[in-house]
Amino acid sequence: MLVGVEMDEDFMIAVLLLAAYFAAGLGLGLLYFYGLWRNAHLFANGARIATVIALSVGRFVLLAAVLVPVARQGALPLLLTALGIVIARFVSVRYLRNAAAMPLASQHREGPA
Image (cartoon, rainbow, N blue to C red; front, side):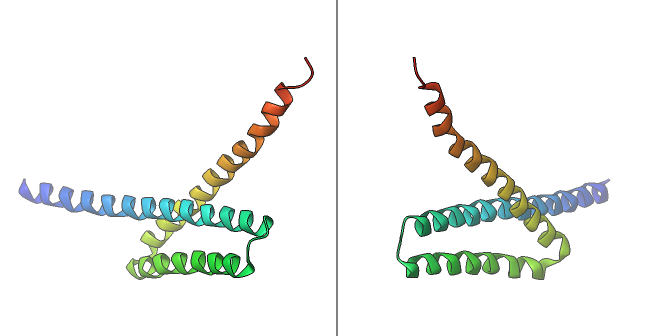
């Protein structure tokens, strides 16, 4: 009976580790795409080119600094981390699309009375 409990404990630890890889990917993706948005915002508003390039390089270095050690852990942790990044992309795009539409919606409602 104790063998089954021990196997369940190992299984749960493995599941929690895999969930942690997914959560790390989600957090990394949100941070990465926020940096991308910030980079585009700075570029569009005429920030110094050195600042824009430094932020771009920083985003890629952060991505590599997380993904390379995760890749050394195996294929499944890498896939779950990448899945988190992809889901973060969809969340970021949806959030920014809704945020960009808000001023247009408020202007539309303030039309002629």
